[in-house]
Length: 288
Length: 299
Image (cartoon, rainbow over all chains, first blue to last red; front, side, top):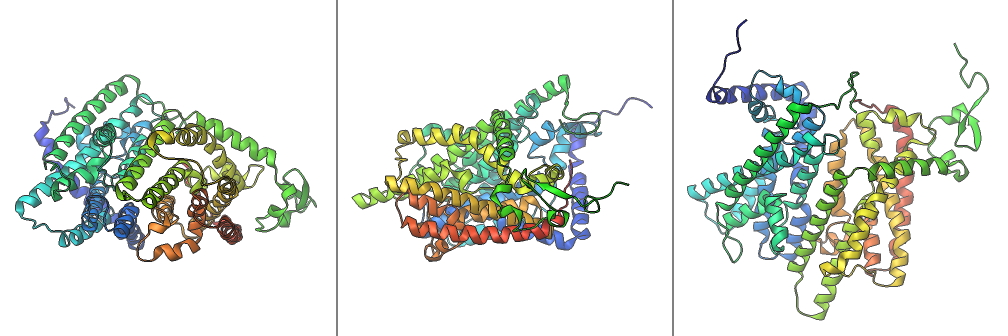
């Protein structure tokens, strides 16, 4: 046997569709193996993911809006947040987005031993389009209703900006979750569930119109725990809400910054991991 | 082969007080549990203390959770200020009342949605060790939960109440009577929360539904319909008229209304007593019949 062949990055990028196809087949097998169970999960997801914003919606309905936001605009925000959550559950499930669990539990080795770059595993391993797709459908339904009741005439440019902001929201959340999750490289026990905490903060705070918050708090909710990027800032920009117009590039720009922070923190954590590894499991396989 | 206790004519020791026949040592919903002398309080106290010291050592994990809860509370307060911003004295009084309601709801959020970790114990297999502990399984779960509350009460609830004036919120109860009535009301709210927890766990055992779905279901609808986030009076479509009659309202809305002086404490507490009784009778009956079906997973 000779040396392993060195592949270029583009060679691996070209493998992504094949990995997604594999993920689709495995997810289809899961659904077909137990259709009743799959239907149960999908139904619950379709109900419970948008339910995270139930309090906001009920309040808006009762008070005919929240601050500068009309009921339809609040509904747009909630549909957008549901769709973002749906994309995360379709493309980054199996603890890829909650990567602190894998790091803290010593399961990163499972990825490092694979004959492909780590980034390719992270990009493709959490793909579950069928079992994770209910929230996407729920988000699309809610968004469709709200857009039909909003005084906007979506043209191709608007839809392009919408998709750019949607992708940016997903990237921003992943960047923040990876940045925070990197703590688990140094504190695997204490920080094992930090991604869960960050995700909880994002989902519980991301469904509120955050107008009126003070400067430091608002900045923190955009840059540190970017709940404002889940739906509030992009919805403001896309619907033109507020006195000072929010630029439509604000969310993509913030997402780029968070992606860089997340990547830098994760690489620093990996350097630490190369030195100390993980000692979470005993020789008997029990977690410490 | 050793003779079984029944064959040897022995009984099993319950608590530290008396022996009962083996036939009765099976889960009996309304048997020894109602005998207060049979409750080994010292063991529950020890369990609660262990849980409290363990939770106090969570360090970073606790701080992150406290920060998230605090930010969420500040966001809710900001939303109310932006929504109820009328100029009349009545508007100001209503805003002040809602701000206090929201602050107390945030400060006592864990108690107003009392939930043990028995579901987690079933999922990760710890439940097997709980069944051999010399205390009742759900009693141990309750003791652990109450123990874990103490660091949170000291590290989050108390500072929030003390620092509330800095955020422009008056944390005080509407009157001394309201403050005193809040104590039993909060206790009843916790009791109803635990009963709901036991009912859901029994349902998990019966149906095989996952812990996460149960928890999401409870968080998604429970916290909204109980009035823990938005006062029920601010619910649309007439929900404000009939939601207070439901058990979820007794978990959060009732004690919060008592604290803020909104409603008759006697009626509110009476409703809580009724729902706590119904809830516990149903929960104990369900748990008594379903606990044999439990399946735990290790990992």
